Amino acid sequence: MGAGVDVGVLPIIGQSGRLDWGVRPYLPGMNGGIVGTVFYDTVRNELDPRYAAVEPFAPGIPNLTVNLYATVNDAFGRPMTDTTPGPNWGAYLRGPLLNTTTTETYIRPTGCIVRNVDGEPVDFPALPADPTGRDCLEGPLTGVQFSTEFATLDGNYGFTEILTHPVTGLALPAPMPIPPGQYLVEVVVPDDPVFGRPLYQVTREEDVNVFDGDTFTPQIPPEPCAGPLHVVDVAGVGSYGPDAVYNPAFAEAGGSIYEGQLRPLCDMRLVTVRERRSVAPAFTFFTPVPIPGRWKGYIIDDFIYFHNLFGIFI
Image 1 (cartoon, one colour):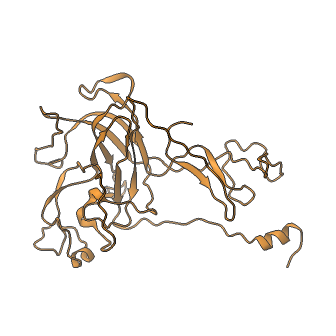
Image 2 (tube, one colour):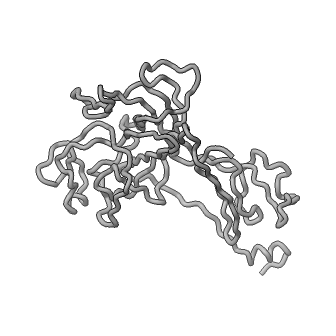
Image 3 (cartoon, one colour):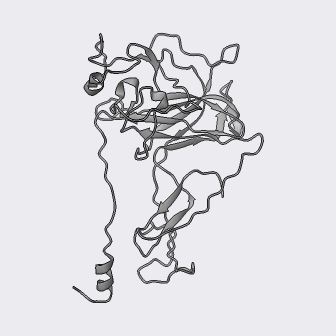
């Protein structure tokens, strides 16, 4: 019981499991806050980064700082942008820092209890008598397991409370549930300690690397990008400048439809929290050279296992 969105599952080939999952509406006057994910954007297909769709295989990025800010509004209550020339030109003005968090890191499930068909714990010499705090075994004997608590997942983050007053910036006497309204959510990219350059690049209009596929426009558009303005400039398309992005395959395909236009970066988003709802802004970042990955698995040969178990070798 509680508030959560992810449950860890240990699947075993040839075995099944059942998880009963229930949700209930938020009570009047309550909301689910801001919960989202920072993704590593391997496949970049969308011409407008605001509508970047996350592929099922896209991993999350852990250990990134995410900040929650109040907006700075004009006399009509509309969020204002920075008009001062400089690196933040065109970005939405950030008010007081209301909260900060770090994107989650995956944690292996622990405490899996091996049970028989009647649901009773199995007393077997190879298994720990008390699995508390121990990593779950990945083997057929363990069976399908579900985590007993909500799981952490790479890249996830969430804000359900604010720690400072959204107008004065003074510390509140106690954390306060995040009230409905508009906020700015920003992902902070750290610098590489060796080269001194950002570890990740936020996905821009110039970074498309897949040039076909379905076009989908959601009925409710994603949260607006609220970062600084930049001129879309793909090297090899029209008259381009010295800071043009080198993306020859994209240039050969015609380049961006926003070539030469001022567009906001998506490392910050303008988010609206509404009563009895939650909002889930996603962020997409990548590196010029793809990060290597590794698939983990194991092979089960039931026939050999069965014969070895009874001392029959073939």
